[in-house]
Image 1 (tube, rainbow, N blue to C red):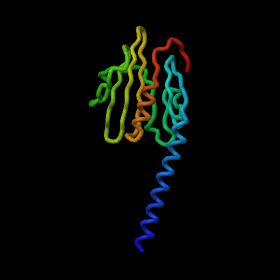
Image 2: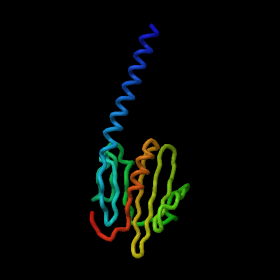
Image 3: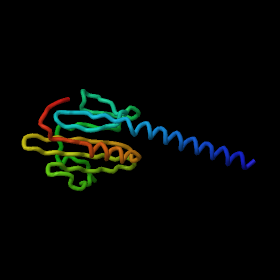
Image 4: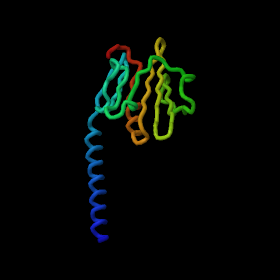
Length: 145
């Protein structure tokens, strides 16, 4: 009696691992580049544009995704925001951990303008958020949406 339960449990676990690997594999290749007033980012295809391109939210969860912020000052950051290592002369980034949720903020200051973003994901998507944040290219002179 015990052997069928162990075999069934093993088959279920194997099916879960295979399903997860296939899902991750299909998602890993589905990315696209977006542009917003001279800045560009590479985001997962599962994030869709809302509010005329000011936010890109995940299909399954409207709390996760990317927001283009009109402005951001360090004083406006949530309590507990920790600065990330210096990434450039004009760019600063912060991380806020709140339970199983991670929020990343990016701020770029040029001579005559400021660009800022917010990326919010569950802890399980931390690497995805870091990839999006790492792809952020603010400060270009052209203005495309």
